[in-house]
Length: 453
Ligand code: NDP
Ligand code: 2IT
Image (cartoon, rainbow, N blue to C red; front, side, top):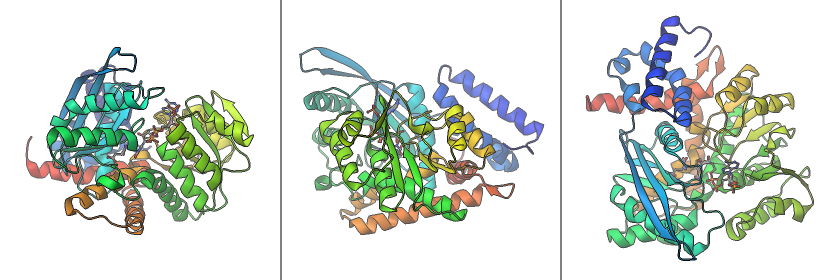
């Protein structure tokens, strides 16, 4: 919405959000994600009555199906444990439901509904035939033994398997779900369905996985930043960067930044931030990968090992940087953080995590001319290579690393182009508007073609 928005459009938006909030009480993350999209889509559908008359956006904010189930497992002491599992099948208008699985103690229906909704727009933006979905459980993998994680994953899949398949719904990783967990789940899927199919992505290379999938989200997030900077006459080389998180997305965001000659000075986890003024190089990053993927330790150990500053309990946003890459979790940059980033000279933000900036933080970026790559565009590289993993599984062939990296680069460039095309606003590019409208059109046209359903 901008300063030219008519009172009629504003009233329609308010009315729409009132209805959504009433139908979905106590789901703040879902409300936030929908509002972020509705701000652009409501004016767009009012200008395009075919969508408005068919109530396409109302339909798109009601998931096709919600599945919740009990996940019962035994810990190493023989105690019986009970968690809640979910799969949100949001929209399959342009392809099978597709999206990650999150294991985190904060997982709620609201969080997964926001993620599934966002995924529908993101997957459309990639240009590949994928619908949107998301799943997970309120299971906390931290501190669990490998055998406990295995038993949990097997129990989770024992119920989930009946809802997924290569033409139905194709889950993948997300927070707390990496190669190890996907392997346990794929093994169980294969065993109980008696089928070796591409029903999950992010698989190991020995059993149908794709090159570049591990790197794709982080690399893609940097490619998107590169394209935003170039489009506005800037460059990446030599820029000082803050990256948050230290998991999959953060590691490969940092890796690509280092390869392209930028200087990464922070990484973090939920306990604190490391601030390495000398810059994280490839060797130090290897230490982080071992620490997180093998030892499953805390980022503080980096500060102890390399003798740099550790900001206990803090996020990276007070560190002076030119570029910011939030790669940990939702709402990790609030209004005050955004103001601090701007004050310290930050010129661009590319979101590796899903919805890491609050609405007020986004307002601060936009007021101050900070280039803003929203998550549904900037982190689409991960699901894009998942889509290419599905393609390779269908062909029963594997492409090379170079081939996949070239395709990923090309997909990210096309997403940037789509955002520019649909995001023109007062002579500037509003990437959020571009991503929302660019993602909406293809899904909406498919829904129109199907008639009323
Ligand atoms: P990982 O589990 O590999 O890493 C998550 C990282 O974020 C960890 O460092 C974790 O710290 C930190 N973190 C998680 N929750 C919080 C929190 N509440 N506060 C502070 N730090 C937190 O997950 P990914 O790297 O895969 O995912 C990170 C983000 O990227 C998520 O938003 C995810 O949805 C998004 N994403 C992931 C994709 C993928 O392919 N994996 C694709 C597109 C988006 P700690 O260990 O202390 O919890
Ligand atoms: O948020 C995301 O896009 C992901 N977690 C990746 C989803 C996927 O299917 O690869």
